[in-house]
Length: 154
Image (cartoon, rainbow, N blue to C red; front, side, top):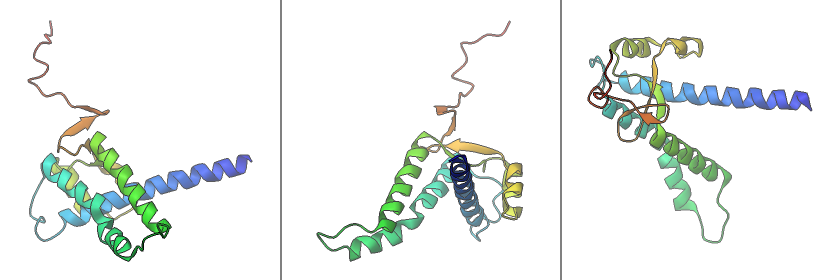
């Protein structure tokens, strides 16, 4: 019984890591594209657009499933999995989607030169960006200088 629990934890951990790898690889492909290759850094709003493109990456396949679906037939498992994955990613995006900090020039350089391995991912500065294109810390918006002007240091 212990062995099966250990195997399940390993599987869940590997799945989580592969999802992180997929999102970072997608963003790397976008910023290495011809239209963005000369740009040194990106705003949070631009990063939010990239994240939205990542979340919508399976939309063509979902559309095919919806076109082929006949009435009174069960929904294919693949379609259910894709819809569930998209829903979970959208919920994460509303709260704060974990991605490399594209506003930091050094992170952009690291990402462009990244070799696609898990070990090299530790060099990235990771942040959370919500669907409004704002950085989120711990599920709450990050404070700016104007919001904490009431605090005085003696």
